[in-house]
Length: 276
Ligand code: AMP
Ligand code: MN
Ligand code: MN
Ligand code: MN
Image (cartoon, rainbow, N blue to C red; front, side, top):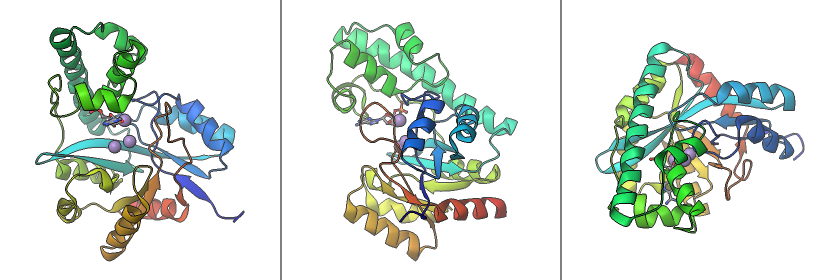
């Protein structure tokens, strides 16, 4: 047991909608005895530098990553990317375009919440609490609603007000799944299908695999044991890398390290990244 190395490959920081700064996240990870963690913020790589500095300090390897929310028909499909050459200017240009659309969408959603429901919310306030306009998400809006006593939890905010299908919901610009996969591969990274158990129609997963996904996040905090087993088998049947992570956002469960994968997965991701 003692010599086995573990990694948690799915975590968010204040660079997107996490509560922990990159340094805090790495510090928490160090108390769990993890060998490595992935930094997979939504549409940004801005947390990676600070995390890597902290990683040296705490003796944890930091795997550079990203989570892209892409669209396939009516389904939002989350793609994880690992080991990209993320400083490539064209790569950052696409992320900037996505983040701009997040900003304008958030503004429209807050307007809707104020105009439709008369909620006491200030867009500038939400931006300020999110630490700037860098990467605003619906989670930040949900937290503002909790602060004002409008809802009790983030899931409640999504169910009643800001989830897809709700009156205040607004669409934003998203990549298609093939575009997301190609973007990650072109930058030398490995595209992995995030939390397939959260996709409401399992039958589309084979199609997503056919687009060129190279790994599946079989282990995730919202997967049941049976789901994890099923996705392990699916990955094995298709020769895909099996990954896993907590999807820690910091404000409630799960915590970094709650879901781990054998460090061998990190070696496989690195090997495939070098080949691509
Ligand atoms: P956005 O990135 O602005 O589209 O918001 C999506 C993010 O909100 C996801 O990455 C999750 O972190 C969070 N989220 C989405 N749905 C829910 C939910 N039902 N309960 C809690 N968090 C959610
Ligand atoms: Mn999130
Ligand atoms: Mn996700
Ligand atoms: Mn995530």
